[in-house]
Image 1 (cartoon, rainbow, N blue to C red):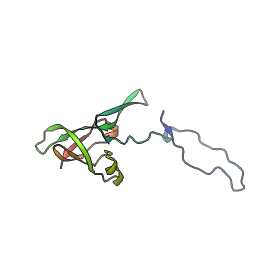
Image 2: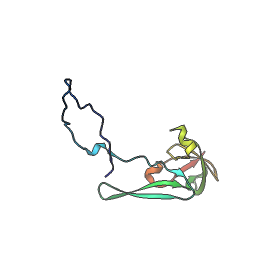
Image 3: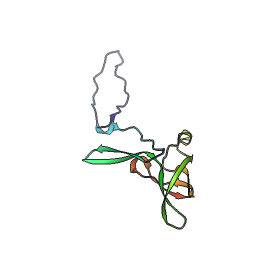
Image 4: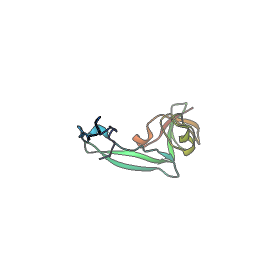
Length: 127
């Protein structure tokens, strides 16, 4: 199971006495930390067990990207670096790939169109 993130609540009454918590651990509070897939020297994937006997593929490092060109053909190109990331300006400096990030590739600048950490691959279109 993933990490347990319980919401913060006060545990004291107005007189200073302690209250018992009315709720315990719930599945809606269970989550996992973000994957933060980065540009790396080789593709690195991690398999995670999920609920319902499902295995999820998470991408930790990416070297290649599937790019759809202006002619409609899809090709596999090498990623050089992240040039712009609208989610967080620090992600650009750290070369973290997210959906909507602009990436410099061998074929030219491309925009990431999928959720990289959850899909296990990097897909994009040429700008």
